[in-house]
Amino acid sequence: MTVSPFDHPIQSGLLGDETAAKHFSFEAELAAMLAFESALAEAQAENGVIGRDTAKAIIAAIAGFQPDIARLREATARDGMLVPELVRQLRKAVGDPHGEKVHFGATSQDVIDTSLVLRLKSLVAGLDARLAKLDRQFGALGEKFGGNTLMGVTRMQPALPIRAADRIAVWQAPLRRHRDRLTHLSEDLFTVQFGGAVGTLEALGDKALPVRKSLAERLGLGDKPQWHSQRDTLADFTGWLSLVTGSLGKFGQDVTLMALDGRTIKLAGGGGSSAMPHKQNPVQAETLVTLARFNAVQLSGMHQSLVHELERSGSAWTLEWLLLPQMAVATAAALRTAIDLATGIEKFGETSLAGKA
Image (tube, rainbow, N blue to C red; front, side, top):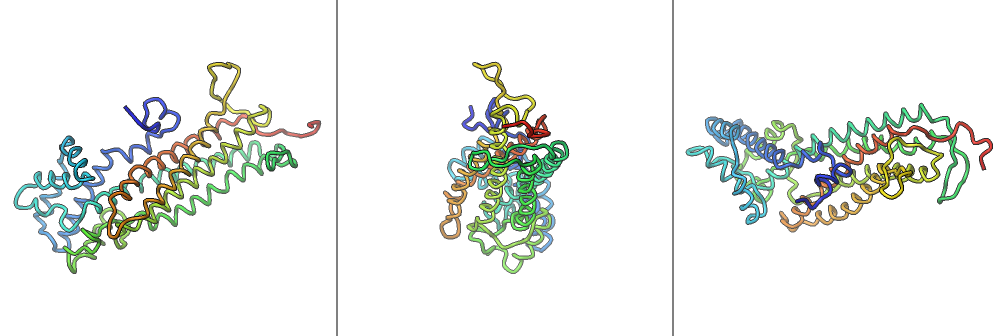
């Protein structure tokens, strides 16, 4: 059973994206969490917090670790997260005398947030590649149809003739700005989360900052102070997701309107109707509008998750888990759909408006 069209066995063909969804699978989450624990052991051994033999025992146990999923599920319902039970199982797998040093100085949020950032880093690379691909496809449309003419429309009323290139430019320009925004955003987004129980790394004493620096380097992340209750960068990221889908929704809305008369634009492979076989519905264009509106609505929830109580909030943090993955998958699906839609434009505008009313 599923409660989301993003992973529905049928509806996901329209609204989902398997490539993006894999970054939010339990397998990907667990792998990133274990990478954190291995890197933490290495960083602590490097800085003399734990012995090298202890680090080797932890890393070896993690390499062959298979969690008890049923117990993780049961414990998560009790603890509100899976990390306490995961750490318990890891310590048992490592065994005496080294097991007690697993996760030393860290807290559950360090593991979960860093796991998220590691997976977002891979996800974002894919989104950026799709933005670049769509940019190139719009460029190809401009080369093919840019000199054609069509009627400019303002406030849903015919205005003055424009070139197809003018409308394409309006679709294309935001993509480049989004890529620029992503470059700047990534500097803050892809940073390690490591603060310990209350954000002060109190268990590590004067070794705290060297360990955090080494941990970040081993994970390929930036080294910055903990951000347990500071969620503005994640809110910025989801704002970026909504900006991307909003721009793609504008593209979809324009195509939907142009398809009304069947003359301004022609699309390959429109959707069929069960009642009217002659119709070719602009399904891909409509989907872009839907995904844009979906992300715009979810963004308000991500802004609600900024409100953390004191050093950590359980409720605000959990809200992110509900919203961010769906927004990311919606954005990936929108980019994929937009590429397909742009590729399938067979006619755009007219070579001349002479004789047209």
